[in-house]
Each structure stands twice: as structure tokens, then as C-alpha cells.
Length: 102
Image 1 (cartoon, one colour):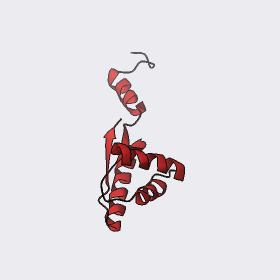
Image 2 (image 1 turned 90 degrees about the vertical axis):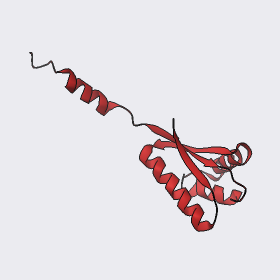
Image 3 (image 1 turned 135 degrees about the horizontal axis):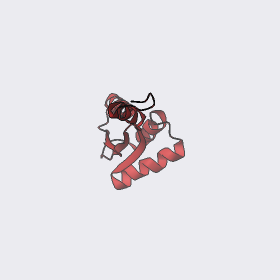
């Protein structure tokens, strides 16, 4: 075997290491109690949206029942979902946030 050839296991390991991480959409769900202003505050502070972007997403949540806050790696998406739930509970709102694979 020449020094330049490698076994298929090594090639597979390299391929696995070069794959892009899975991406997840983080979604806000509409409810009848969470205020629009609170949703905008969450979008600005947790998702780093501009006030204008936050308004567009908030209106999508309000009118369509669901709004996408962004697309992230799994760990970041999980953290953002937890931050939304924590902030909403502390403020007394039932705001729901979820994530789905892109």
C-alpha cells in the first residue's frame, strides 16, 4: 500500500468531520395573553433583531400563529428556546417557543 492511500474508514471519518452542523428554526407561537410589546422585547433582546425586524416577526406570530426568530445550530437553538421560556415565565406570560430541524 502506498503512503498516499488510506483505508475507507479514515476517509469516512474525514467526511463526517467536514459536514455542516444541523440547523434548527426557532419559532414563537401565538397565544391570547402575551403582549405584542413583550414579544418585541424578546425578539430584540434574545434574538438580536432590530425593532423593525422584531415588529415584522411579531405580526407574523399574531396573524399567522407562528413566527420564525432565526436559524441556529442545535445547541444555540435550545438555549434560545430556554431563554424565551424563562423570561416569559418570570414576566407571567405563557409564551411558547419551539425549534424544528430545517
